[in-house]
Image 1 (cartoon, helix red, strand yellow):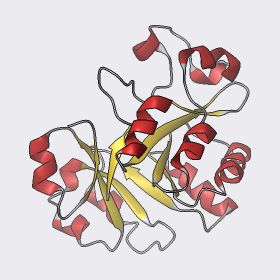
Image 2 (tube, helix red, strand yellow):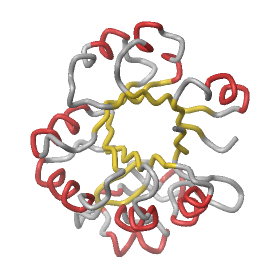
Image 3 (tube, helix red, strand yellow):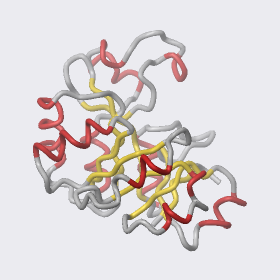
Image 4 (cartoon, helix red, strand yellow):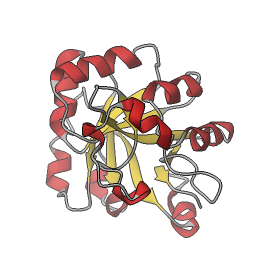
Length: 207
């Protein structure tokens, strides 16, 4: 299974926008999208903590109400899930550290979508999700700065079904032998994609 990172992105589509997700689903790709909460506690699909990189506005998502984000065409998570029609896997990366109230809201809002997988580099998010509902599908994310030892400590944890791993771990035998479903990110070239796509699950960008 291969997952597209932030949706189709090219001259016609911006990252994490509804049109890019629609095009991704048309091509039968699952997607990975990051989520943040707005000031009024809505879940939105957006990569950065601020609007600076994409819109040149120095404001944080958490300090803006959703009605003021709509003009930027930043979608609600619910909108994206409805578009998926329960046909495609959706990796939902929780960017900020969320309190248990917000995590409970997230579980409730996504409960009818059976292909949601919650992932986070902030492992506390995943641990708290499991405390709220031990049956949700979750994965732990690791960066290229993490050690193999930090990954291996999850090998016996049956509640953690997925490992989201930087591509530098693709050739690590200890990691490869772990009996978890592993996804490697971010594949950015055709050469990388065709080298690894037959035997690995990949999270890739437009190739």
